[in-house]
Image (cartoon, rainbow, N blue to C red; front, side):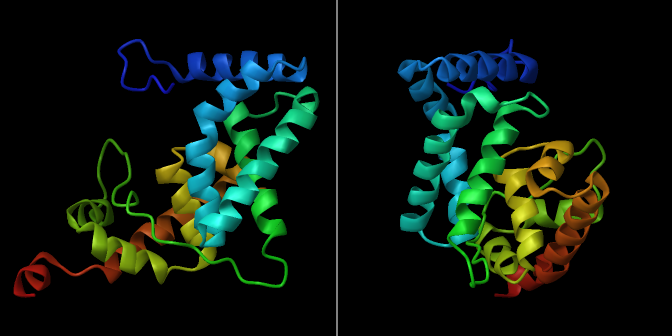
Length: 197
């Protein structure tokens, strides 16, 4: 269960719990495997669906992800968070299903703002935009921008972990996030345009 709403929540506690579960999975513990599935399946499915555009193939990618986890849990080296490792596996499983096709990304209505201490202008625009307008603008973004937004907002991964999942430098992730946010903000109607509709 996700405890992010709890007062005592700590990302380190979540990661420690994931590592304990993964160690138990490596030892063949089916209950630990089920617990790991329950903790991460929803976010992984949403990510796979973002990449594949349809629920059926996304469900297959999710199942193949957890088959790979069951068989390779002992190979986890701890160079990233368990959650990041899972997203990396899910990405590879989804990409296997897109051979010869361009990735189709479905709208992510959660990509309306970016957590930041000092909101930038495009963040304010995105936060005020309605979900329908954001979803429409989102579908017009290049695939690499849609994917990075999905990982940042829907999956909630930090920039360093997104870089690990995508296999690109942190600076590339930051650049993609910046350009994706700016492009989204420009594509959204202003307050005056929304009220005149």
